[in-house]
Length: 416
Image (tube, rainbow, N blue to C red; front, top):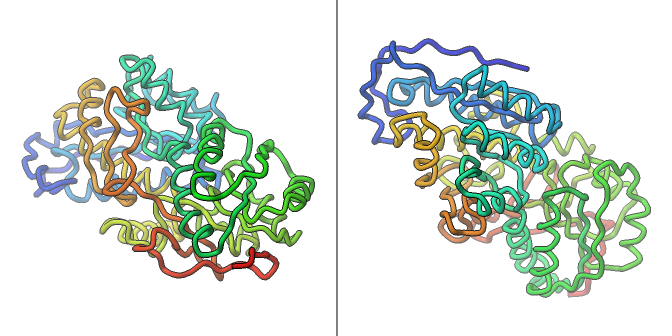
């Protein structure tokens, strides 16, 4: 476990900590305890490796501007090794021993679902930068008083499905006359609502679903799966891939599967995925909330530049959200005037923050996805990027597009 040392309080500067309103900082810095944020993540996973570094970057930026009301942000980082059991132990330690005030935890739905009851028991605010399962927010809706401490800082699976379908309509159906699809997803908590969403919305945008294939995340040979899909002759594969690793992408290329991959591929959001797949990701489409070179907001590109300068690569999707979440927690502490968990919940519910991924606000109590992100025009809309010539290029929505789709030579497109 990597621990970031606390920083001694410094005399109050002209604190412009997070927002202009924070100029009113009044607490004497020497007497102020740091605001401690625990970060539990999958340090060795492609899609999880940027969570802790991005959170640390945000803390350093806030601290350089005087902290929050004279209090520094301290990040306490834990590696859960992609294990729910280890994550639970880390959460317990974070709260009881390390005295954290809030927790940012995991891109893995199974991990967050295991932590959610502990956030309730220990009455500690927790927000996920990357898990997608709808069950996370459904649990809050079912028992708000107990589960209100959990916030969903990424998109729910059903919201992701809708965004993928919208992008498919604009990029595949309208210009390329695609008509048929096969859903191909790993068997995991986050893909159950994703696939249900796909089943509904693909038909609405004009793609008939020919088959729905779910495979174990431990699968190492995709030959039988790709053979089956090829036999169905769909125009496109709609994917839900996060934990299976590079294998499906590598085998898609080496076996020259003539059907484009379009949908969600969490690893593909990382700048290392080209090298990880030895270029096999060329032509793969993937949903993301931000991407290199895409100015979703005025904060997006400065964050990417600062992250790249400090760590030498570009963050995966969960890095953007983890960075934003440190700022959101910091602002909530300022608004609450306290780190008391119940007061912090109230303040978090009032979040209206322009971050790297768009305008962040949470769905209210009474919504079936309470504490999930608001999506749609004016809030989070998502992107659809494609790997082209070793780079991630955004193609959707149109107003943020940096090019047109390009397909590998082995991909066969329908007549159009």
